[in-house]
Image (cartoon, rainbow, N blue to C red):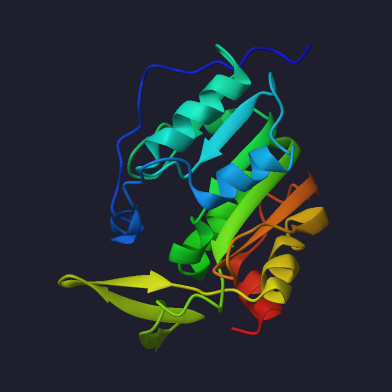
Length: 211
């Protein structure tokens, strides 16, 4: 049986190094499409130690993942909403990260990928918004666009399925596309066998990505 996940009580101070990305978090009613689909397809198993990476405002997702994991086997991390990085010191059977990577510019996205990979002891399920999502329109910036949200400009990177699998392959040895009923607005992958490269240089990552 895997060890119980320790959830430290002392929280780290949030910083502003990731700008306004947290403002893209949506307050949802009911489960998000990727979480609902992963449950429907049988990927999320009862009793697995679980990290909810980038939980945002998706309280129903958090409650369902906590229920599936069981007492003492669930943890969550979010740069803004749950900033205690100590939970990333554990490795989990299951890591779920929904709509996180697509709101991060390359430098911060690289750090998030590393966090996900280093926390994965089993499989990470990662969902991003797709190039089929027609709501992502804005000014070109880095490898994505800046989208106006109220008075703020927020970064978004819409992914093709090939882009997502290729990017994930720099951090995981095994990456598979999960066929979900997303209406073409998102892609989900299952990634395992992480490549732990703590000192991988971001400039090398950018070069590999053609940035």
